[in-house]
Image (cartoon, rainbow, N blue to C red; front, side, top):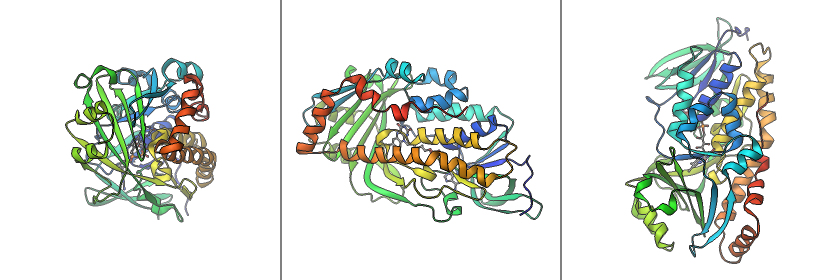
Amino acid sequence: MSETPSSAPIVIAGAGIGGLSAALALRKAGHEIVVLERATNLKEVGAGLQLSPNACAVLAQLGLLDALAPKVYAPPNLEIWSGQTGDKISRVELGGFLKTRHGNPFWVVHRADLQNVLLEAASSDDGIRLIVDTTVEDITASPFGGLTCSFHTGGNANSQTCKALIGADGVWSKTRKLVPEHQNARFSGQVAYRATVPIENVPERWHKNSGLWLHKRSHLVHYPIRDGQLLNIVALVEEPWQDETWSAPARQEDLIHNFRHWPSDVRNLLNAPDSWLKWALCSVDASGPWTHGHVALLGDSAHAMLPYMAQGAAMAIEDAAVLAHHLPPNTENIPAALRAYEESRKARVRTVQAQAFRNARTFHMDGILAAARNTVLRLSGAQKLAARFDNIYGWTPPQ
Ligand SMILES: Cc1cc2nc3c(=O)[nH]c(=O)nc-3n(C[C@H](O)[C@H](O)[C@H](O)COP(=O)(O)OP(=O)(O)OC[C@H]3O[C@@H](n4cnc5c(N)ncnc54)[C@H](O)[C@@H]3O)c2cc1C
């Protein structure tokens, strides 16, 4: 293969949270960037995201915390409740405790607000070009030297010389096909119903803290977002998936039926939003290969995980910082640099993915197992429970 011009850009497939973070981190490292996004316009659907201190450490490195701060909410606590009895089981201290412990905040944010901040930063940088309505096809050796990434924009074939292709195109990644022996996405048998509601439309008990409600084969998460103006609600249930697409509008009556044995104020909360969307929860085994030659996967395309640790986007954001660290602009052996990125990420991502799987079982326990779980949670202090996530939240990006 002819030598890739060092001035050639890095192409990133996907302008989601992972792709945009990678664009900013790689640009900061000195690369020219082209981001190819399948959607015609970038609008994140209405739902919330927890941004733990490890994710915020990367956003701080990218200089984005000030832009984000007016749009986020910092919940003081996570309260854990029984969906069976309506009793409070325990409390995990977040807010000031985690900020002091890890040096970066624990925030909750509307996904659209985070994506807008990333997008504004990318759009204001001349070294990052975003092309929408575009899907990546292949990467091949170019007869003119270097590599060529071929893609379709609005149905028209096009190409771009590049020095690497980063597949940040989500759980149903097409770029993954360019990595032989990759792992495929698998449906977990669990479905997430998501909605937001203006905070003034729900009683005050839901306004301040994050909440986690546990019941057999289902659980519920809620927290205020957008500077406390909206309440984000996620209801997770074990049920089959029958729709043709992997996310779809949900029928509120199906959701309410699933929660018919829950306390009445929770059922009232589920009635508050005007509409709900549902997602089939899928994962991609992180142990599969993420790189091949000049192609590397990042975020959900490499390692989509169940949202039970609220770490999928955080891992994509971490990936971006580590990738940029291993790929300075003068890198001569790009495949080796991409392999180094994969090697330095894999163990951590597998640990977090396994923790998310364990939580899936723990959250949905029934009977004596649920009683034992609740006792452990009750006996652990609010700070001790928060410190159990030190291995995740205490991570900081390479400098
Ligand atoms: C219910 C739920 C709750 C969650 N809560 C949290 C949380 O609290 N905290 C957290 O950290 N994570 C959370 N996650 C996980 C998080 O949403 C994902 O891990 C994260 O969005 C992955 O980002 P990504 O950029 O890798 O992929 P995506 O966000 O899926 O972005 C992929 C982008 O690629 C584009 N694309 C797709 N195919 C192509 C193609 N062929 N060519 C070009 N572009 C393409 C898509 O249009 C999209 O813009 C949650 C997930 C769910 C389902």
